[in-house]
Image (tube, helix red, strand yellow):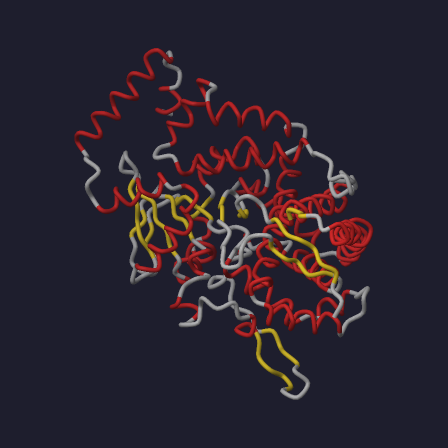
Length: 459
């Protein structure tokens, strides 16, 4: 109520008051403490925010630490599986998306399932759950993905191999996933993956809106982006323009697009990069794929156990959603003893958890699909998949909000991997040893795209 009232003041009074308060605060609370210094350092380096917070979680004995903003607002970040279970399941109703998250992403997510709590969330969850649990949907997904794969993606890669063209594989996979989710969810084909790779105004605007909205989280205090919005300047002006381009798409549709395009394309982008760095894993995946039909049915895809494990291992390093934030609706205490006050933002960190020696052991830095497998038959080289509980590996969320589309995502990813690797080598253009920059917005991206050359596989 107080915040709303303050914005009713004329801007000529509001802005001087804001900067006066900021100056007074800096005099009373100099940024000399370690926590404040860490916070400011993180804000100054947005691109590496996820990596830096991951490092700090790794240094904490409890895999949990706190930051304080300029106005003393406390935020908790954790990579502790017991805390994650507490937040996402045990005290599910205590930790909601909250006011700040809804405000930050309100323009693009509206009242979609990713941005709401309570009864509205329950209703959308029930409707979506019914759709995802039908066999007819699974069959339809198979048909749509196979058509997009065989009629568009494979011919496009074949032509690139023939001409020696450099492609941005991240862009190609996003186009592929966008065509699929639009056809599956809405019966509309945007045809983004045509040979001409047409400019898609909606997807460009959508990407910019997600990026600009995500950057609000890195600002020291919410008032800053709200003032920029009132003045219609800088990033907030660009956000309004981008949102206007996608306004015709209703809230629930946006949620489907994020779930169906951004997450799978991000996962596959990093997966193909990791395979290029680990040829022994690629050879194992290829051997398994070649044991199946060129047009695998659902059961064939389901039996790609090593491929499934390699995808899980890839997402351990590079989760499509690297962190998620909740807001406490009441006072609480986490299992590790961290005290939570009402209104505190609590962030759990899948990126940090995937790189934790405490969770994965001393070989955590190895890309090792075998950590997800156990041998069934040594002679036949048969494997059985051994999963991890969703609170240790919260890549698909956990608890009541666990991702409804995770099986559909694996189905799509394994069909793409099978169709592409059977025919082509994906060769990064960047020098060997160069690691791409991992960018974290609402979902993750590879900075600058993923430029590759496509080579026909002759072996």
